[in-house]
Length: 325
Image (cartoon, rainbow, N blue to C red):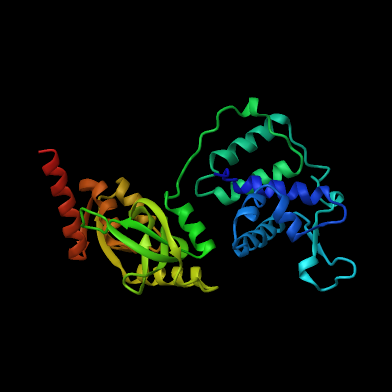
């Protein structure tokens, strides 16, 4: 099995290839030879997803400030198949006033590597790409062992790949209040981050209906089950976020935290919390997750409403008492 190439390594390889060419490279030459593309180009029958990945990579490099040029080949004007790409070396270098010591390079690289799998992964890989592509060699002896902080759910990566490749997937999903997970077969459409959590917008192929899944409730492995029955619309992520936002706006709870407690500080600083005398009005997309959060505060918070949330918190404390009784 071919080694999975990290995103920053693929971008770095692309930058090196485009810097090294004077006359530019065609898309075919890039996809068939550059590390990060070549292995998939040689084995994948459907190269559409690989070409879309290349288009995203181009935009990411341009967002980094890399002067990636696109120009027509002589005699093939306006023919995108023969368009060529390059990065002029004289336009891509650090400003004269910017200088780093080897130790500073190492610390910058270490910070990026620590977060490469976390919530800052996009920014960190951009930082690594920028440093390496500018010719700043990071000294592994100085960096030593870099920890990795993972804040994404395990299902995130396979679901991202399934969306990109138009694949149907199966996974086991544990609904609130259930003791055993249910098998779901879905065509994933979008992954969105809302209220500090990742959500999957998908078409449930068994129920033939749209569904939203919380990634933290996916149990075990995400498996490919065939071709997707639905493909995402161009505005799919925006629509998914709008739906979650609508749920968040209408799902309101009123709680009364003990003044000066951790519960008071945390809940008072949630987005769009309203102060109602001694109580706080807070919003959420998921009352079951909110019940877990409130239970952790113990006697420092009282749930005023809704009654279903108050009962859920009481049930959690009752279960704790029974386990430790």
